[in-house]
Image (tube, rainbow over all chains, first blue to last red; front, side, top):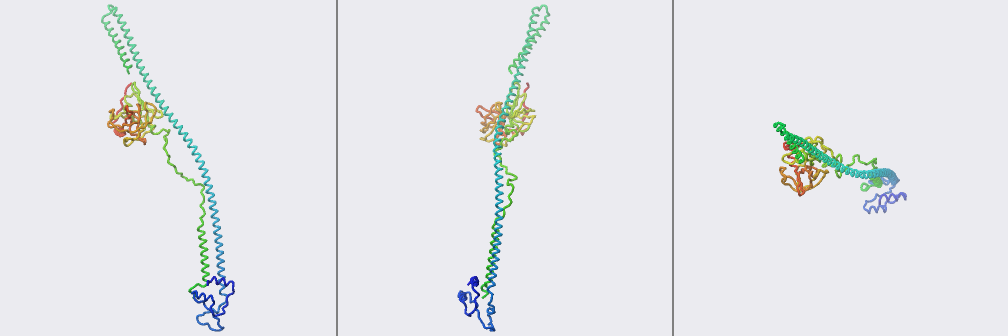
Length: 237
Length: 254
């Protein structure tokens, strides 16, 4: 038989009195269960000396079983109080931690919403900037094309100007040469006309002087020939 | 017999101690299984140094939007004695440009203009005897200068020609290296490259670039089959390395 069973039964019944020297049924059962024989209570007349080995068991039969019951109740009560106290502390701790996590969650959500708004704003700005960038790129391409066109126009104009300058130089050279030819021819013609007049009246002039004048006229006409050669050279350049 | 099994009070104490221990352990376990309080929420989670994504394209990053190949090109006007011709060239440093010998030969005056129409004054011109190459020194700085490639282009390599065909607008054309041959004009020592990049009179002196924008040759001629002939960069390098390879360009007098 278990001790708790014994205690439970002790609460309902008065403590048993030991009346017979015979072993009770529980003791016999315990003995038969192999737990060993229970100590037997022996009632002796007063003044009878105890036999050796029995001790004082039969001499102190009073309130000994009630003390463990009170101790157990006290221990259980203390244990229950401790459990309740611990559970309360644990619950308070759970509530505190839960509130902290809820607040943190709310803060994170607010932070996420704030960043979400910022992201949306940034994306909108990015879209607008990208659109502007495309527009600027298009303008840049147009400007580049225009710059290239203007550079080409300037180069062509320079070519034309240079070509016209060369043409003007050419025409100037040709005109100069033609003028030289004209002047030389005029001198030649004048000289020849004058020489013809002298020759018509050759008797009136010295033959040596006439020969000298003829030589001068030939020189003038030779200069005209040279000028014409120069003109032809300029024309062929 | 009392030493073999605990007496009832002792057993009760043991049971009570066990229960107490269980309760304490349970409470401690419950406390430890509770999550710790959350850390304080920051005011912002935006990183102070945001990652910078690599640009997907380099774009036109020059000061005026023109790329390097356009900025290095130079138009050359050869004002001769009763003649006028145009050619192309490209800068190899701040005050030096490279072109063909026949572009600058017999000139009374050389006039340069850049991609954006700016005029650049010439200080001197010199030509190479063993290749159709010439160097022109400028008084004003040139906008940009490319790098010379380390080696000649290979057959099949795509090349880009940038110059002023027919003396017109700055033009970029692409082609492919077809091979190499001896110079049909006998103006260059060694072999020259043949490409199918379209060129015209006025493209002489145009830079031939590889995919990385490095100079791999100089255009100097074309044939009736629309093949363009290119002085390879190896010849270019050897000429530039030889200071005696260039002599003052022949001029004419007006």
